[in-house]
Length: 127
Image 1: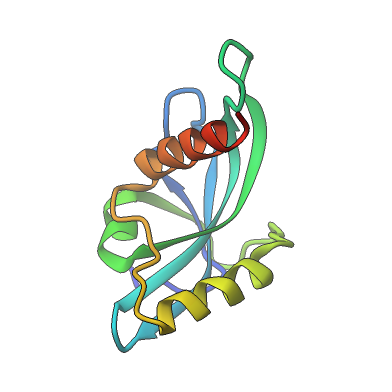
Image 2: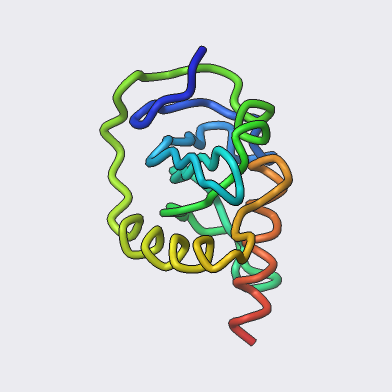
């Protein structure tokens, strides 16, 4: 199956996030990086404070190399998702500036591991 903007996928999730979905928001064929798939994640559950229960979270923008997305997705759920990721355009604009400047700005591990990494980064920045 070709990856396309608007698709909503099930993916290999973290434990407890089995209902989480990945939506392809944009595909860039970047001259320095190659094909980058920009996704939004619905239904993530992030533990932002140690010792507290995880909270429902929508992740508005995570860029990945195409091969990583292909390894992560498990089933195409909808060809055209109705999920909305309001913060995507602003986040993407910042990403594009960094990428065009030659700074690699994408996750290289599978989506579930990248969400682990994002969760850890948010927790560290809250201290």
